[in-house]
Length: 456
Ligand code: C5P
Image 1: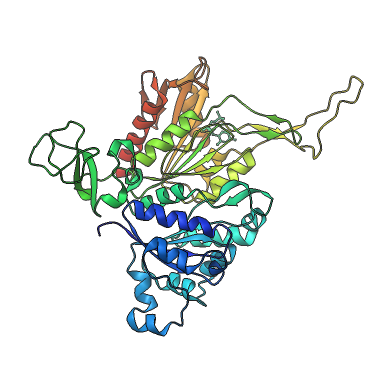
Image 2 (image 1 turned 180 degrees about the vertical axis):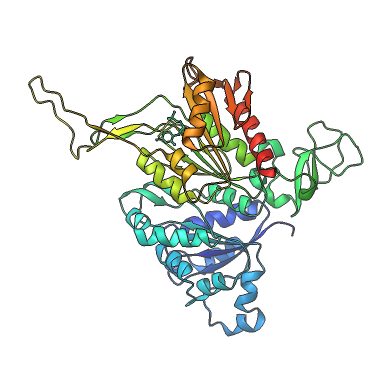
């Protein structure tokens, strides 16, 4: 078996049933799964179900003499390539953050020397509680990969963040944790190849013309010889590593909505397309990408961790929570002002000529705060949408905001919402002007330059 070996720890929450689907996906992709159930987990799924799906024994207790004699819990925690905690309940996250080891799951988590991916799922209030957020931060600071939960209707009837992400999203995250980057998941470009089918230490690239090379043909079995121009070749990761592999890229995108009352808000025309394209390009270059998105109607690019926010204040908090990062690319069109005191109830017409006075107050400048802050990423890139004197304004903005680069774009045409962009990358001693091109191409050029800058 070449595929990844996953130790799956299933916590006690209603989302535990989705762990069954995750086991199926991992196995379909060629991986193997050994399941550990917490006591709470056994209330939601049975060991029998997970044993049948994983075709492996399921472990539930520290005090199993037979297992201790045959394979101790230390060994169990180390013979996997990745430990996945799914669902990670508030209680399990708290125990992990505190380093407790009072049952099999927590003992394995403390004893493991392998990377750990936690997939939280819980009630929205529990997720947003300061204690849980503190625990998540502690875990992230100590190297645990903690996925963001999805937002939506919950089993308990409330609405908000806390839902377990879709099992296919979890598989994307697993592939990234295993170092396969976004090509590690099934894509058309790989002709159905998946992370699990690519042996560790190798990656798939378009095949060289050499007919003697070990070819992988789209849609055919690995190792089949081919003269197909679409053939893929497996090469060592080390020979041509993904340029942003191991880097954390933090991106903001889209507009912000500043509430006036519960039904009205101040907005702008940003579509989020350029920021999302940069997130996609960075993920393709192998980075771990956190995309903090204002309200937009765009799908999350594969391999990208997305955090949805509404207002500038929420975006600022999300940026802070996502640090540290190696690069920050602030593409969002953050509203400069918000309503000083948004109303709790819908504002009503008074029946006379009076209009409600809207007092505005300035929003924090997220880019400037980050660039001047103590946890400044080594490379900070801002965007500047201008309608005149584009380069001169961008040069001044770069210095004022403390950014390393400003990507200036002329938005006098239909750039906002359109698919093409004309940009100038303004650095301390250079201005690189690109011709008009699709936003995806702008993103790829920018990501290449970011990778070069980090390599220096
Ligand atoms: O000042 P201006 O809005 O033109 O600056 C644009 C750049 O600053 C963009 O990178 C944008 O994401 C960032 N910005 C920010 N927070 C604000 C305003 C702008 O991060 N409040």
